[in-house]
Image 1 (cartoon, rainbow, N blue to C red):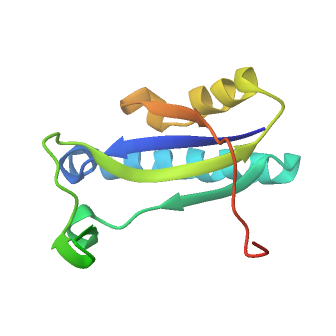
Image 2 (cartoon, rainbow, N blue to C red):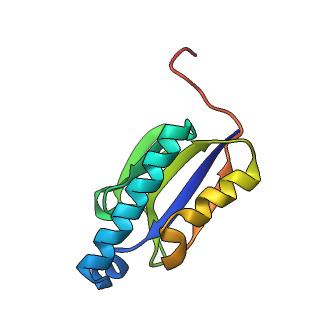
Length: 120
């Protein structure tokens, strides 16, 4: 079963970390991703650009309207996500708990119900 592990964050939080702590978080994340790749459980891990580079598209009356960034009321925004393919929800939760981001914020675990490939 595939799961999406979602990490939220904000630049203010990341900037508040001591550079050595941030380097350690990145090292631990890379080590976890390498371990999951070796076990065959890692489908992909992706960091996202800052929210100021995001765009939102809404279509009304067949006319697309593009606005800058997502409209957010919260300080946190989607920062990265990892897709794992593992035996079940318990394993997905175990992987999420091992992600360094879970110690500084939270990691959401969402089952992926279906996927569409290029063969469609």
